[in-house]
Image (cartoon, rainbow, N blue to C red; front, side, top):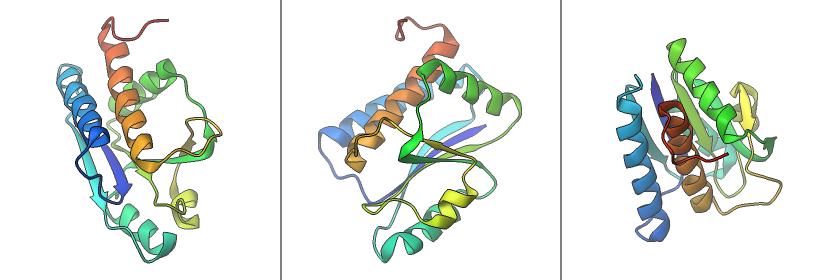
Length: 152
């Protein structure tokens, strides 16, 4: 199973880039022993409106279960995300988490996504959403691995 985090725009050097890189490195290390093939972050070019950005997002997500990030999405507790990742892995399904640009995602991305995940009703800067998603993926894999990182 492959996990892809696909986002519109480039995350420049800075604290957010460092945090995403750190959480993804931790998640890769944890996921190796759990049967996850790969975890990658893909950046697609911003611009041209959300329809054009949506085409670019979807072009990098072919053949995968799509989870769109949006403030109006469902709130999944960390343990629920962990269970979903395990189920997708056990069914040999790749999963792509899609983060749109400044105007969100296109109608086509919304239609083709199986789920819409939200990190609360607030509007978050996209660079922080990447950090939060990377951390939640790491946390979900840590839960599966029985690591003490997650506490309930």
